[in-house]
Amino acid sequence: MDVNGNYRDNSSNNSNNNLNNNSNDNPNDNSNNNQNDRPYNNGSDNYFEMKKINQMAKKRGQEKFQHSSRNRLIGNIKKKFNTTMIGALAAFEEQFGELWGDGLEFKDLTPEQLEERERWDIVRSQVLDNGNDQLRASIDEISHYTVSFNRYVTKFVIKN
Image (cartoon, rainbow, N blue to C red; front, side, top):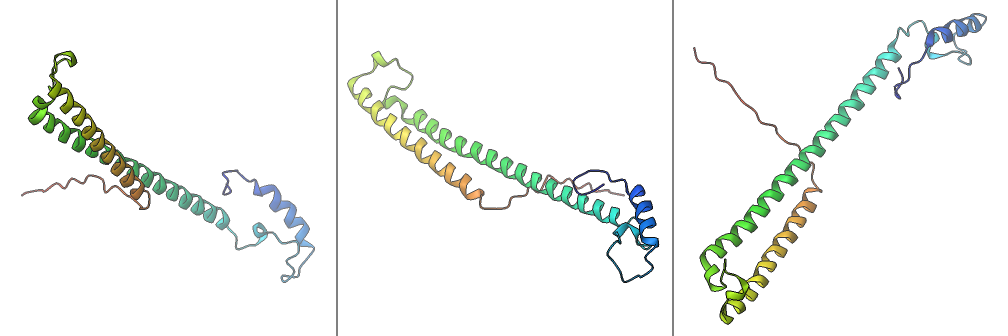
């Protein structure tokens, strides 16, 4: 099998090349010599090809693992940012929501509550916009690093 995954049939090439090369007894003349015609080549090409294929597959696996590790980290960071932003807003609404009539119908709000609600909506939008900007900056920063998840490890202790 070659590097591209194609199988080669070297048996027919060897017999034809051996017939052609038997007339040339000069060992220094490499004009018609094929690597497969050498007596010391006992499938070593196949070994090196398989080794190269194995190394390429291992490299692809490592790259795939790094990609999935990066995506895992990004997903976890997104969740944590959103939890932080929404949790902070919820805490403010819980403690100060009565100022802008949190939970009341819009038609039931007093003029002061309407004014406070407008201010709260502006502040809420600014908090969410700032958090989302920082989230995007963090994700962009992560793209500059090589990330590898250290998998969960469980150690079992055997007691006698």
